[in-house]
Image (spheres, rainbow, N blue to C red):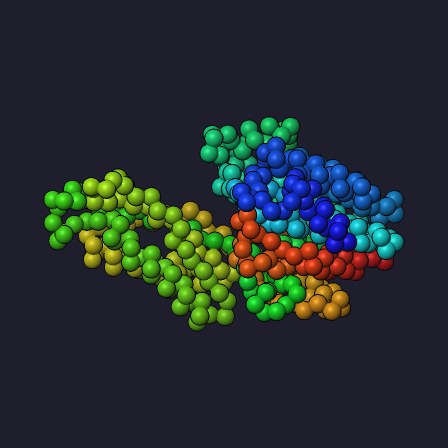
Length: 414
């Protein structure tokens, strides 16, 4: 199995070695993503699965018999697209281990009483359009097609144009939605993209919830002026006014996290400064803020604290600060029973687990809106992700295969 995993990992990544200093770039709805999906299709067919493409471009590899084909399917899967110059395990590990689990079950002569599917979702990453999980949104019926249609990438291509460039029909994408009774449950395997599993000394993580964000855009309005002739007293420097808030966001999030049962993280992550000229006092500044926790009340508390701090800064620095809420998504709680089963099957295999929440979004959060869903994390070296040096060991991938296979065996068995 380990040799098969290593070889198939490279095939799905379209390389002959995982040592890629410039990383992997397979943006959603590009030829590169479709090439990796073609490898997924070929690999699944070699395992004896039938593969179809839905109207949103998701690939569905299905194991069914004449006796079970009308029953709800037990599904697993993830994605093969990447961020710009990212790693080769984020998403790919879930697709790889899903196929590996099917291989293990077939090798042992298992006969499923319910269909089993490995799903390769299209366009999970937000790197190209700023919109994530497009394929799984379509499958679960969560896509807002009117809002999506004219969103563009950096080259000016719309999502609609990108979809149609892949041979799909924009007006048919909504037909990718599946009925509630089609899927019995869904489980996604992913690298953790963090250090909690590794630091706990656990073999894998069983995920309870997905932390969805509040994202704010704050507009600091001061007054530009000559850096050499404007006295220090009475300046309205937008950057100077924003500087204390950046530290406040980090410090306040750390304090709230330490005081709470569930963690919260917050990042001042983007700055656009105008006029951004060496000899001109910054007259305006836009500050982007990302706040995440599975405890929605914590996110809302920090948002209030940020606006209270802004009122202080306005008075102290003689600027105005206007806030815009870009995103406010409630966190997604995964199915407790599926989580318990993922802990149980791992324990039966002799593996230790850590129960934790995810700070990043994944396809499973959309599937959970319609079907009982769960997630497991396998460790990734140093917690590094979205980076060329991202890595999960073949031993951890093999453990993931065993856990997914055990779950499928139990859920789709006689």
